[in-house]
Image (cartoon, rainbow, N blue to C red; front, side, top):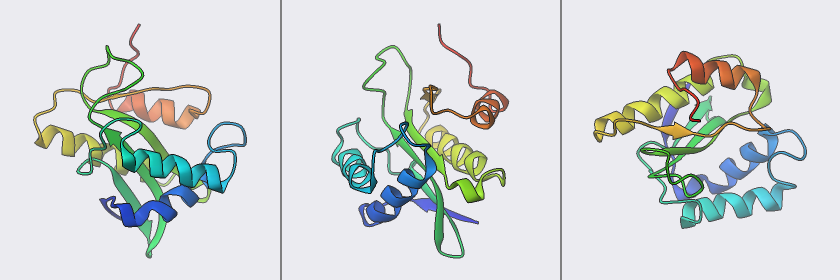
Length: 143
């Protein structure tokens, strides 16, 4: 496994991976929608993208997962610090530590910039494994 910061050149890979990673009705409706959402992410429509904390994971040059982090949540003004807008792993590569590696790398990048917290949202598309990972890494619900 290798990880690196995302770039705009990763747009097509990120969109394909994003579309493949979510069940029908949760993520993008189709690949075109996924491409549009990734383009909007790079354009800042979901907040200013933290390129240092946003990562893409590879196995033998094949993208298998990604995390997208913004400077703050545009949906929840009360959430502190940088915000994970998306963390997704190809279903065929789940359970191998990619999600953990992506999230811990993003946390490390935020710490290096003296961010004291990092926030994320869970919802309908959040798997039990992802919720367990967040708990293990110290994330806690905000009431």
